[in-house]
Image (cartoon, rainbow over all chains, first blue to last red; front, side, top):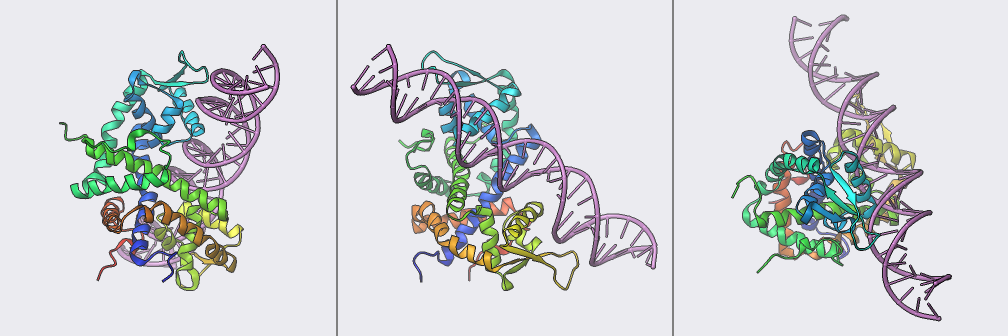
Length: 163
Length: 163
DNA sequence: CGATGGTGGTTGTCGGAACAACCTTCGACT
DNA sequence: AGTCGAAGGTTGTTCCGACAACCACCATCG
């Protein structure tokens, strides 16, 4: 057979992966929007900020940690700023740098949204798999990310947390 | 620890999975748009039609096979119709039914787009994994889809193709 | 110190997706 | 037959993401 095509097994896996790619984001989005009025991406932005020192991060770093482009992030932060969940500020160093900081309102929003979100993730992903499969998925996504993000421009989050 | 939260291992896997969810669709989209002027979803629609008898499918079936809602599909088909890649027609049976059929132009478009797309998929997914991992991914996605699409409303594509 | 390329970030525009409302047709029940 | 609920599709609006252009600031070198 032609080497440039996919065999039956590969194709079946690929088809299912595209289905997941199509369905999962929608599920995450709609749960969060329904229950907390937040996009999954907005939630992720807030969550990353909440885990950072001073609850503040440079735009470019925040973009890296959320796998987003800078323009996209800028828009989202503006929206969140309008809802008073984050605020921009400037630090002492590089005058080009802009920082986003979580406000009290934002902090509260994440805390309230988190349980429902985690529950959704649990139900649709974690609990659907055996422990072994979850480990396998960890390795698989790591391998894929080496291709998807070859220069590791994005956060150091991908690096193995091994001993 | 609180059972309702994720442990370190689970969290790491989940974080990477969200990264894949964020990055992979963008890569597929931009490759196809750049090289063929098609969205990944548009490509998928055309591809599904091309594999169907008479290169024609009922809207609802096509929606199922592409994991899309009917409104979304309707809009996309309208666009593709404007580019003369598909055409709508009505069959003999149910008068509510609308069918979408691939035109010669559309058929040509898929054939030209396919190699580049497959190459992208190969590079970013298939070749990034060992054969064993690919099999594991097949099982994993299958398990996840049972949660994501519990009623199997979507195409029968997910069903195991086993003996 | 002045010019020049590069980086960090923002803004504007345009296309696509979600959601809701709507219209038509089918099927069942009376 | 007449009604009523449900299914199949379409249309309209609103919002979000991608992309390109742009501005401000830094760094290097003349």
